[in-house]
Amino acid sequence: QVQLVESGGGLVQAGGSLRLSCAASGNILSINTMRWYRQAPGKHRELVATITRSGTTDYADSVQGRFTVSLDNARNTAYLQMNSLKPEATAVYYCNAVLTLTSRLEWAGWGQGTQVTVSA
Image 1 (spheres, rainbow, N blue to C red):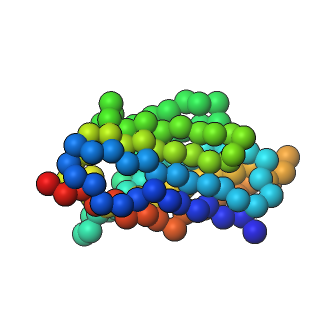
Image 2 (image 1 turned 90 degrees about the horizontal axis):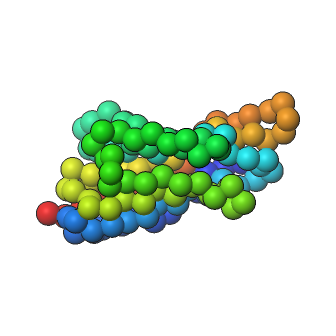
């Protein structure tokens, strides 16, 4: 069974750092694309960062320069390093991945979400 398992959320003071992990498990050949989203209470889910298997990255303007997304292909795990956190970063963070299972089969899905709370 293929699944994405997130970890690393928590409570941090403004200006602090957290690192989120999203591990893909199951019979997987590779992670094609990993995206990190967040959803604050009462708001729509927004795209925060994207990384492709080749290492191409993209960030929302609101996190550019403070967040870094990375991918460990050997461990089928993606990370979101979040520095200089602001209270407005408080949200549930979700990873979303497109995985290659075989030469002809892909899987796409979401992690369970992890809460990040930044206190002022």
